[in-house]
Length: 367
Ligand code: NAD
Ligand code: IPM
Ligand code: MN
Image 1 (cartoon, helix red, strand yellow):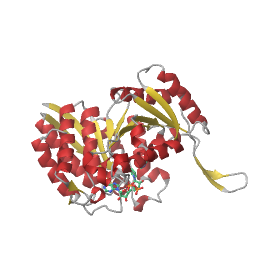
Image 2 (tube, protein in one colour):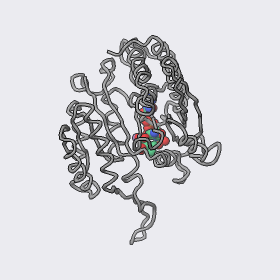
Image 3 (cartoon, helix red, strand yellow):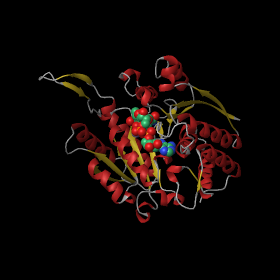
Image 4 (tube, helix red, strand yellow):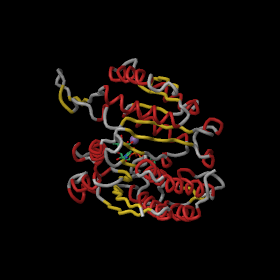
């Protein structure tokens, strides 16, 4: 059988709860398609800080690098919020993305017909939304230098960051986004702030230049403030969106609510072809407000596991098994609190997991 090494990084808060469900589903869907795994579970984030004193132990990083794919829950929590920067759980995540060189973060947001009533938007606005945010993940203001704390000429305390993109960084994410758009509805909207920011002016210039190589894709450019409004006014106008690191972070959380909950959105973070393992994680965080209460929605992580099979391992059939199971579990009415609506069955994270396992087994085709 085909055999893969998967590094699991449950992390903090609801991370371990949702990873436990996703691991079971991954195992079962894989075994039904003749796949074998070696799972390596490693510490990261606050859990690693408490156990080892650092948020990303060398051993965790090397295990991740040596695996075929990495599945992450979430990191962070109140306990570590006031840590120095290098001792923050979030810093560990940024370093992991940087070390794995996963510059392209794919964040699909689709409204499942079963969940239209969970959306905060009106049915006719939300119904049929199917978009993909392609977020640049290893550059921009998250990584730009100079950054830090200091004092200004008046002796006042300051904090500062740098929004910086090189042309090659923009070019590679633009190529990735155009290729994704080609496989979708061939519409790409590049979101920037080119009316104000130099980094965005270069972004727009490079995206327009690269568009010449993709005449079959219809490109539009939008300022980020307008884009955030348009997403709520008429989300169906979007197919593929490409944007920088911070705008992609914000717009994808916004897009998640169109689908009913941030607990539904998966992601895949990919590098150059054959450059090493991809990183797969839900877009949500560790949700400390509901952690340990069996309330977390595991679908985002389970759908991230499907993306791991598809984009990380090329195992399309097993990926579809998982996606079919998600639809079947929703069809059978099982919901966590964040996507609950009248007439459906309110259950916890674990029970959604159990129902998902039955659905994987029965493999009812999507539709
Ligand atoms: P969050 O995404 O953790 O939570 C925001 C809200 O959404 C909360 O009310 C939470 O209960 C709810 N929510 C999130 N995921 C859910 C799920 N699967 N099911 C049901 N409800 C869900 O964002 P936050 O509160 O801003 O951040 C909490 C911590 O997580 C912080 O430490 C932050 O830095 C960290 N964080 C980590 C990641 C990551 O590891 N990738 C992503 C975002 C935030
Ligand atoms: C995300 C998170 C992270 C980000 C944080 C926790 C570093 O919000 O994955 O969306 O900003 O990228
Ligand atoms: Mn985020």
